[in-house]
Length: 172
Image (cartoon, rainbow, N blue to C red):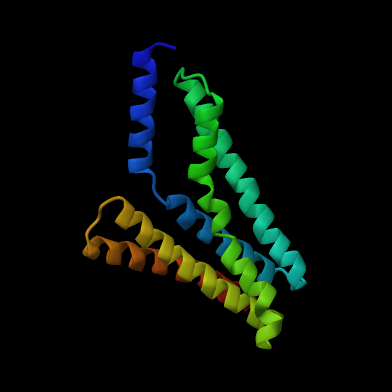
């Protein structure tokens, strides 16, 4: 590899970090909310199963996103290498990270005296709050002003509430 290629790669890494965001966290939180709604409307899952389902679904979607990014790079004639793969894995990791807070909410729900239905609502609340938080972090990371951060948070709150409404609608 020539020095020019190495320098171009180094600049690419800095540019990549500068434009990295947390949209995967928004997506992962929305995914977790959907998993909880599905689990809660199709029957009650034991808590341990729901915790495992949340984390494994996040991991599977993370792998799918990594695969799509790497395959997309291949289509643009860039040969994927180990460094690029590690960057993609790291950049898409918020999808998995977003599953942990609602999974933890389910796991600790017995300590709070919640029954299974209460645990589901607690986890849903945590997932939607995470979705709003990730969207605010993504907006700030992208350089948005506080007004746009608020708009992003409200839009994601509404999207989360739409998913929550599915739980109410499907139960009746």
